[in-house]
Structure formats: structure tokens, C-alpha cells
Amino acid sequence: MDTFINKGQEGYHPFVTQEPHILSNLGRVAATSEVNSLFYLNPERVLKNVKTISDYQEWAESGWKKPQGTYEAATRFIGKLFEEVDELKQADEIFINNDDKQNEPAYAHELLSELGDVLWCATALASNSSADIDSAIKKRMYDYLMGLNFEIDGVRVTVPWRGLHGKIATSDSNIELSEISEVIFMGFEPQPSTAMNLDYEDSELEIFQHLDLLSCFSFALRSAIEQQYNYGETENIYIMPDLYDGRAYIVASLVSEVYLNIAYIANKRLGLSLADVIDVNMAKINARIESQRVDKTDGKRSVNLL
Image (cartoon, rainbow, N blue to C red; front, side, top):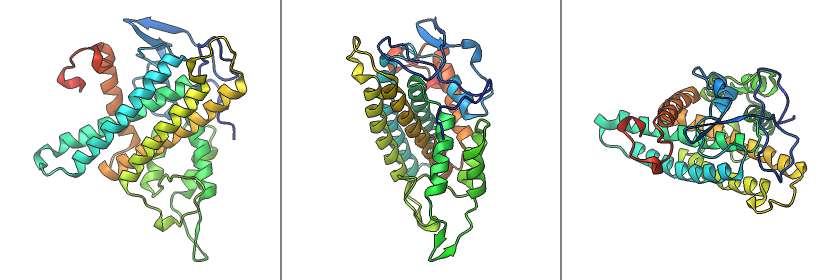
């Protein structure tokens, strides 16, 4: 299954790299706008109502501090991803060890907020690498469907999420945020490998293990992106499409796993959906962009921007 299929006018189209020494067969040419020292791709596409994975990826292409499609943007978001995964682990530890019931909603909101920050950084990295997250998630869904053992002791097991899982994997429409959450509500759990052939009823990991997987994905993303841009040190040597585009495929697969694990953690820890994660994240990032406080180094943030 092609990770970069052209899904038509309504589908997400990755944009091409702006690095002059990199050749690629992926993506569209996109005009970058600079507003108040922040970079935007097609500002008119900033969406208020995000319903699909592609909607969110497109929305996340606004308010960057480095131009899209550059090694500088990649290194910035890689650094932020590591930082946000650490903050997510801290927020989760505070939430589960909380003895202060009065402040429990605040701890839950902080955990939800940090889940969104990790998702946002991973999404930006996918875009910067010309990767289509929607198509990659479909590919991963197919891999999970084919890799799981549906028999226990020789007896066929009816897996509640199998039908929806297959529908998502083979659909030519953009994945709805609600579909990802629904398949998790029905019992699906992302695993370290899509081909582990684990018994359906005995496959549950601890939440801290899913958090550790996010750390692993961060390291793998850094490696894939540095290879994709060749460490940003070969401005006079052309990087051919088979290298850049091949690494984009790997980036897409890794980010799809981030999405599935974020959705799983949100459900198991908070009883919330991927849409809930994204709603909180969009509200926070939009406010930070409007106030020119995208990073901590941009100045002191008001309480509503934390």
C-alpha cells in the first residue's frame, strides 16, 4: 500500500523540501508566508473545525519559527519532541500519584495538554519530511490487522475491533479522528511490533510502557530525519529521491505509531478521545501563536498559555 497516495482534491498533499541540495518526488510546491517572524503554509487553510487526521496535519503547518521543509525546522521540532515526551512522562507520574483530589481535574488537564504537545511536534516533523500521516496510519492499521493472532489454543477468537480496523485500513477517505478513538474504545492496543502475533486477550501493556514507546519513536524519528537531510552538512552534494523519499516513508510510519499510542494513553488514563487531545492542543497553540509566545524563550507566558 502506497504511503503517499494522491487522495484527490480533499486529501492531504505533503509539501516538498526547501533544501536546494535535496531532490524528491513527493509533495506539492507550497508558498510560505512570514507573519510576525512566524512561517505559515497557505494561511487560508487554517482550520477551526478539525475532524480528520489530514485536517489536523494541515492546521499544524502554521506558526512555525523556522521555514517549513528545512533542516532547521526539523532540528527544532526534534528537540521539542524530546522535551515534550519528558514533560508528558512527568505529567503522567503526577496524575497517577495524585493524592490531592481537589486538584485532580488540573492534573488531568495537564496530562491531556502534554499529550497534545507530543502529537503536535510529531505532526510537524511528518510534514517537514513530506510525510502523509493519514496514509501511514492506514498502512499501520493493515499491518496490525495482518500481524495479530486471532486464535487462542486453536479456537478462533472474535475480535470486536477487527471490522472497523479493516475499514479504516482500506478506506479511500480521510481518517476521522473519531474512528481512531472508536477502534481503541473497542479494545485495540498498539504494540511494539505490528507482527508480534500476541494473543488478543493477553496483549495489554502498562501505560508506562506506551510512554516509553514514545521515547523510542522519538529517537527513531531523529535518526530517520537526520539521514533524510544527511545531517544538514551536504549543501553541495545532491541527495537523491530514493534516500529522501525512503526516509519520509519511515518518518510517516513512526509518526503513525505516535498517533495510535497517544490515542491509547488518552483513553486508558483519562477516558478521553484523540479529538479531545487535539481540541486542547489547538486552543493552546493558537493562543501561543497569537501572543507570539510559541517557545519558552519568547518571553513570559500568561496563565492561559501554560
